[in-house]
Length: 148
Image (cartoon, rainbow, N blue to C red; front, side):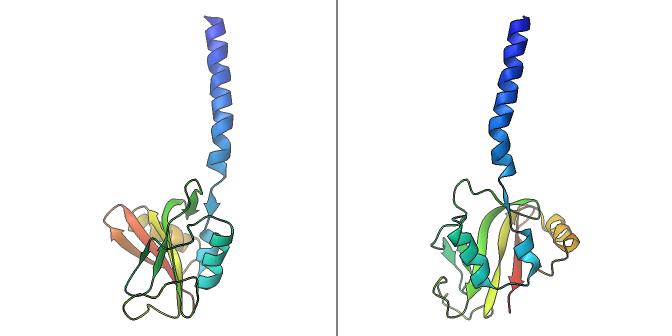
């Protein structure tokens, strides 16, 4: 019986050691979402580091490009898992133009899994002036910086 307990403990410790780097390797977008940057710098850094797919998964009519995180990139924003990274900068080859009027000359942000009230609370605690909008009730929230 004691041998089984020792093996279980070894398996638990070994399993925890293997999982820990995954949990600790999250890339936090919080500093960039202080709204003091621009879409080009924000998105190009994520592209160069291979945290997001190079082609947007969606382009809105207002030209906001939604980029999917690369599988396993583990992006977070204010403690929430990032579902998509958003960006647009006028006359920048990284971004595709939508069918309508662009949202602004430069805007960027993230879509996270979390309720809008909680996300907004954490965004404000961090000192960010980002706009926080609920996308899907109780589930998905957008954080957007107007990077003028």
